[in-house]
Image (cartoon, rainbow, N blue to C red; front, side, top):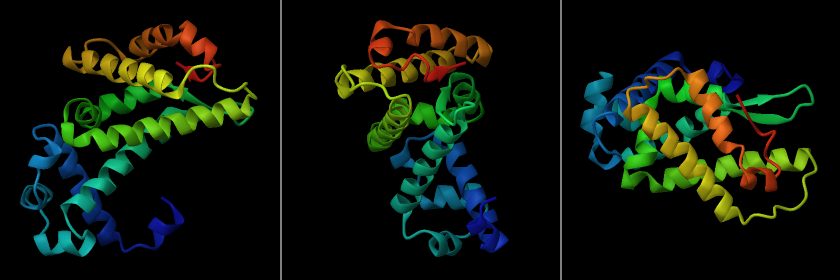
Length: 198
């Protein structure tokens, strides 16, 4: 719990948690635009008035929730090595996806989530840039758009297939296999062979 959260009324935290869980559950059955305040409040067992005490409207709520989900996914996926360099743990990434598949499925399939997909891509690229800066990598020889398209389609397509098959393989096996897929000439040229670990 952060310092800010410790000063917030526990009822507020409880309400936000209930709304977040309701949103995740609703995402498993509906697109973002199909979810309304009534759905959220009914599923979370809170009143509409309580919802509007916390959020101006559904779009503000959606933005906050999706941004938080993306931040949580990246925070859970990044680990620091003994030199303080953040690396992307494919195993942690897939464990997070396994626990909350709704987020990645929304990023993959919901046209209303394109802005959030871009947010995920931008945040991942920021992490990549931080890594490249810390290892003193030369200027990126691969255009950013080419690198990020490769990574986004590799990550999202791979996870989509895994989820679509009912997560029949263990996350560690999937992380190891994804690591092998990412061990490509493109990743080597971008000096990212040490960034993705499993």
